[in-house]
Structure formats: structure tokens, C-alpha cells
Amino acid sequence: MTFRVGQKVVCIRHRDGAGCPGANYPKVGPTYTVRSINDGLKGAIICLEEIDNSHLSPAFGSIEPGFIASAFRPIVEDKKRVSFTLGADPDSENWDNRKHAKEKV
Image (tube, rainbow, N blue to C red; front, side, top):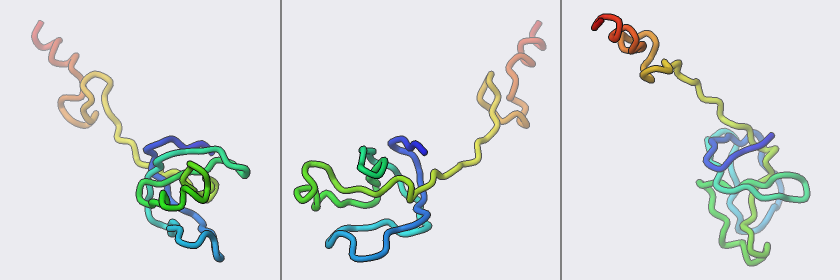
């Protein structure tokens, strides 16, 4: 699965165990925002806006340690139906600007 910077994601599993001392980890359930995406040995690694582990960067080179992307899934937001003419909801009276053009003729 591919992610993009700015995308909302939810953690579906988190790593148990010792992990990295001093690191902050995501919790299962809350919504997070993808801040950056890097390549890792086991796949894409994402950093999150809401979790800062930059204090660990010297131990990992110049890259902030992140989290394996497969532990997250994207948030699917309901998309509102809109008109291609005005951008209004199709159930509103303004959904089609052609109606007004016909009435003026």
C-alpha cells in the first residue's frame, strides 16, 4: 500500500517489546498524519506529524526513525457529491448553473 505526505492514517498494530529506548510509539486506534516517507529494509517507513522522534536521529544517521507502513491503514473519508458546474451539493437549488442561463433567455 502506498501512502502520501499529508494523508490521514490509523495504526492497526504496534510493536510490542523493548523497541528503541526513549522512542515515542503510535497507539492503535488514533488518527495520525503522514509527515514523511522513507525506504527501509522491510518496506516503506513513515514518520508522523503527531509523533516526534527526531531526538533519536544521531543514532540512526541523519534520518529520524519512523514506523513500518504496513502497521497503518489509510483513513477513508466519505466524499460529498458535488456538481461539476458550481461545486454545490446536487440536492441544493444551485447545483446546476445551466438552469439560470435558460431562464434568462
